[in-house]
Amino acid sequence: MSDLEPIADDAVVPEVLEREVLYTGRIQNFVKERFRYNDSEITREFFEHPGAVAVVVMDDEDRVLAIKQYRHPIRSREWEIPAGLLDVAGEPLLEAAKRELAEEVDLEAAEWEILTDTATSPGGSDEHVRIYLARGLTATHAAFDREEEEADIVIRWIPLDELVAAIAAGTIRNSLLQVGVLSAFAARSRGLGTLRREQ
Image 1 (cartoon, rainbow, N blue to C red):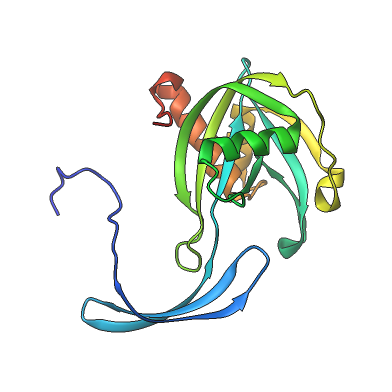
Image 2: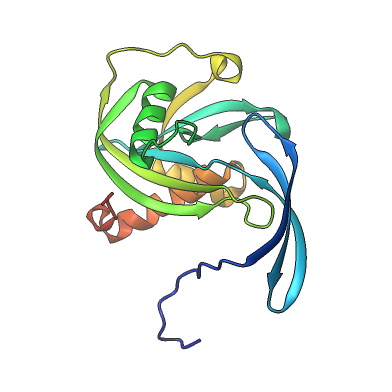
């Protein structure tokens, strides 16, 4: 590989020799695949995930809307950004992001840009998440009822620089918040108008 080549991941389509669904869940399945790679037969087990979207919501004062919500697997109420599953068949990513923004924090946005795409745990899951930057905010006309873990979420506007400092200090751990906030911080230094938009 030449140092002059663009820095980009390479898509690979290995020959899958055998596939078994070990567990079918409400959101994701646990599967085992035997495949051929580099003249070897390899077996891996991983979670098969529908994918998700997440949104860094930023106002004109460079404050980010963060929500604190209980997450049972890690026994923690953690700071997050609005996010949700791609669980509506055929729904475009941007429409899913708009839906999640309205459902989680009763907002809609006039400006949408792509901050980044991330694979959350590529050694154990095929989950991919597109993270958007949403600006030009207005309240939605209808508020959504929130249940279960969402019933007691806390919503706070936090300065972008304060969130970056909290990430560096290790006091907030949510990966989508970290990736989204650090991407927004980097984008701000280049000028937010340089971000990608949906084609």
